[in-house]
Length: 464
Image 1: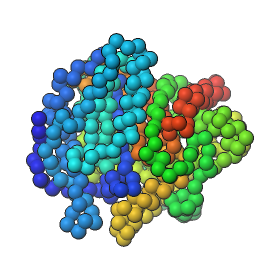
Image 2: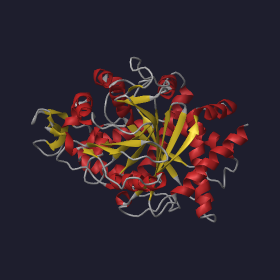
Image 3: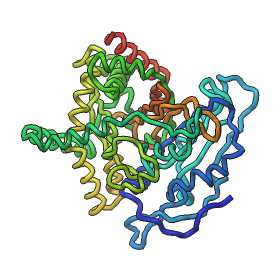
Image 4: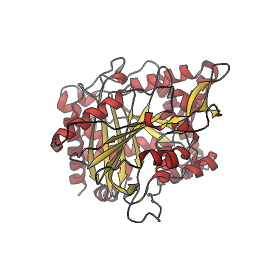
């Protein structure tokens, strides 16, 4: 089965697309949809042809260099869908625990593989065996050059339905962070003290980000091996489920945001793991988290069609920047709730700083005068010199279904980053799924997962 008009040049590849698909940096997003019932793949090819490919021309395109070979463009090609769909075969009649192992090994395998540049940068994997989490699992792997998490969530709106009433759209909690950020930025220009604060903080944060992107690196710790080529090492992916209602109770008690509670949990859990693995040094070791900030002005998710129609607010693509957030040291912050308040203070300060805007301009300048490969190298060093990346997405409030097959759980992971640890979080149907992508053989995923769970429990108990 083939689809597309071969040879049609669509548009230039965005700077972010060129950064994340270069010789020095190649990032991909893995999304896992956990099926409530056994997977029926009889409609897979027709759904891809009639629903998925029409979402965006980039799903039917490859990157090619332009005439001067300095930039890249998207080129429309014929899509052989069979090349993009993979159905692994394992022994039948095994136990759930055995299939858990098979699934973990399989997702580690595909996380380590790179996309061939001769075909569109996406693929589907159907794991049609029951595990302790689901009756089957659909793994969607897409190159980060095609878009970020916000773009992919818009794509979900076009592919998935409301499981209980397909005639009703999926709904999402409002992205209040984006709205508040917009209003706070406008208020900066109304008060001179805030202007001065933004300038001073921005200059300091931007200078520090440049140092982190060149020669200043975090300490080597139980969550950062610091070895060259860490992005090519196997990754173990584990997950943890938390209750959104319980997070809201903590949020209301402390007067913070949901993101503050999540960040505090991750920071505390990380320090607890470091102490368990290296108790003598870890309490005072330098550890930086790169928190991804969505730079769009939209206050909620948009469909793909709306993204393409409103380029100034919510356009498709990669529109984010890294915030360099120091993880609180347990030698300075000892109580569980202090990690939440410290996370609130640090992240709020960095979000209101102008450093994120200056960083985007720096990337553009590097690309313009030195080329996309040099800019990608700078981003690669920024990632490698830090200890971990943290990002999150808001999922639907209602249960989703794909071709009338209900989805009971969903999570995602960013792979290909030159770091030993990546942590993601996604809400879905009143639950928060935290996923941890850890360097296999270096980080003990089971102990890290247990530390995250214990950290949330300590924060919850201290708040009540």
